Length: 147
Image (cartoon, rainbow, N blue to C red):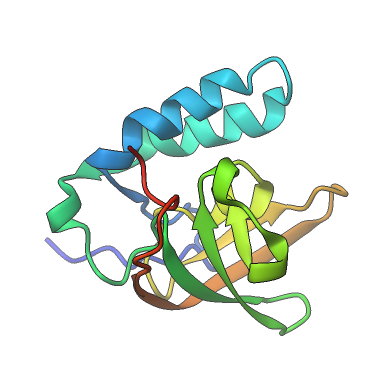
């Protein structure tokens, strides 16, 4: 059996998503809580969680985007690279590049491995492709983790 590449470029397949079990309940609760306020985002997050491989937090690969791990990605339409840290909504702070996991970019990035590419829809309805370039270790900052 051959290893499946984590990229979707040109294949039409969506890349694999891996989520740590210690964040799963809070992510599901966030999505369910957003069903009435923002059904599109809630559905997207629930869809990603539904197809995710859930692993013990200690087994989450270091190259996978997770809550509190800074990620550098490239927007393939513009070539622009950006580094952000996905966080839970209460810790979001765009001035510190902390993006809520309950935003289009947060949902697109969470659970992707380095090298993965994924089409995503911006808030203004444009379709873009982003590629995960690097994932940094977990930040030791309070408020980023579930709990």
